[in-house]
Length: 367
Ligand code: DNO
Image 1 (cartoon, protein in one colour):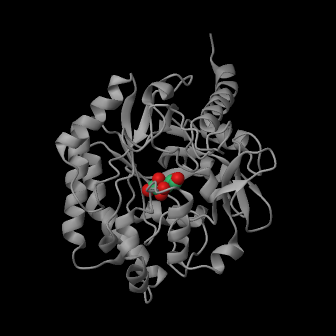
Image 2: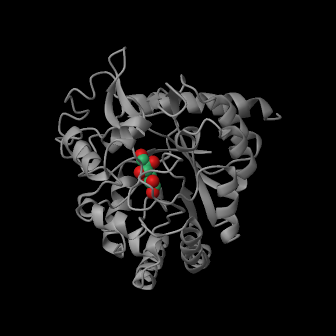
């Protein structure tokens, strides 16, 4: 297991790399070039700069989250071939700089969806929340406006301004798409890209749908054991793998995340580990890594028992210790911490996950 931490880049993250390097057992960061639109090629110069910046803090840069998939690929539109070619060129360039895994998603139009970015908990911390009723009574446009206001102008991954410009039109383009057609579009992408991922030794790790249920009537692809198995079989290669996002899969109470972790360990290249607290069958808030409805111990143990050797990062934390009160972590930074991505609760999460990992693995070492 290689413990990592998500970092949004030098102009986009309030958390300095040197703080990340101080968290026990963190080997590297998971990062991206957020300003490059989906479908464009990532240049050698930009990747080199990104990699060198991370390395200068003594951290590795081996996982990208995300190289976004252009909408034409998800829609099966005519320009998809050109965008797939660009995707492959980006993989080739990333390979030049030692990138080992790419996390991406295949969710139509939107990435993750929450009803609240800063929901107040009784202990004074703030966290992200999902209310099914709220989502059913809003529109994607209203939700985007709410996020823009609540995040104080910070572009959220998955809700980038260029994506939001066309949100209404793009959603309309999915109106007649069947789930079978959507699966076929994913297969087309995998058949084109995975042979190159193999050549460049980059493990592709799809992120599950977040939340794992239908949103705004759009198709869904990867959200439970059956759909994961179906997806992995579309192109059967170790390079066609999964990001085990415990919070995304765990948001469906029917999903046994530990069982999913155990069943697919050899295809899980990256794990996003976080907890959530259900407040009803459909609604939840994101809780601390240790306390919540998911059995994080059971999930870590399932990974360890099955020989997991991929990357892990502590996923979303709450905002604690004043982090959401306009108190930027770095006095030098004018960037607000992103919802879910403050320093403190994620660092506590990493410490908890490290402790669990040690507890389940160290006793096995035969001296
Ligand atoms: C949210 C993240 C997602 C994830 C993408 C991967 O916090 O887990 O935005 O990075 O879905 O493409």
